[in-house]
Picture 1 (cartoon, rainbow, N blue to C red):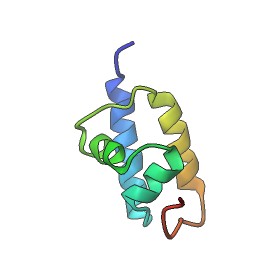
Picture 2 (spheres, rainbow, N blue to C red; picture 1 turned 45 degrees about the horizontal axis):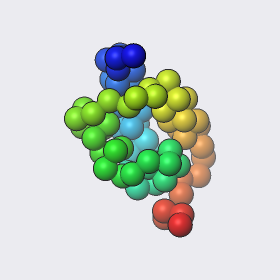
Picture 3 (cartoon, one colour; picture 1 turned 30 degrees about the vertical axis):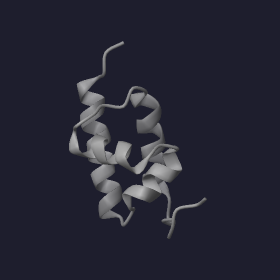
Length: 74
């Protein structure tokens, strides 16, 4: 299954929206269970998410949160 370019653009838009709300790349990565470099590459358009629908669902749920994590959980 090839990556969906529309989904990739939507993922980028959601990542920028999260950054505008104060989310860090590390906090987003922690919530998604991926590395911060993966989130960075998605945001820059260097790589597409293999499971774009799941990623979009999770990003939308993060955008609805009122509280932003202060630091990465271990």
